[in-house]
Length: 151
Image (cartoon, rainbow, N blue to C red; front, side, top):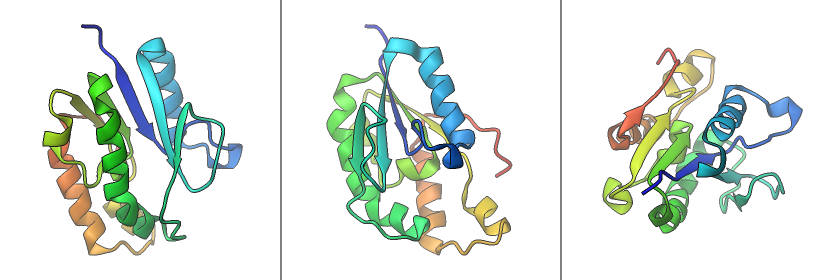
């Protein structure tokens, strides 16, 4: 069976003021995997940029609270699509929050954690303790972790 990838992100073709490592990684994955990859984007607003896009039900302006509050909804949405893919690539650790490995059984889970809680904290942001716990659990869920990150 040929490999089929689902790339899970918040960073598919963002506006120029939002281009960062995550956005560039998505473009690189898309170019490298070609037609073997589909992209699913979770976001705050409605954007025509990704083939599959979902607007977060919880629109909390605090990104850490928003990620935690939407975690189960994101996990459920991905689980509903997982059967069509051999591999799911999560671009940012928060995209993997609340995912239960048994719901993705038979699918390889790749994680690019990107910026994590300790790095956010070092940059002066206040991170809820539940966020660190969700990160820990997400790291245990991934089959493969690829990161240039410090933490």
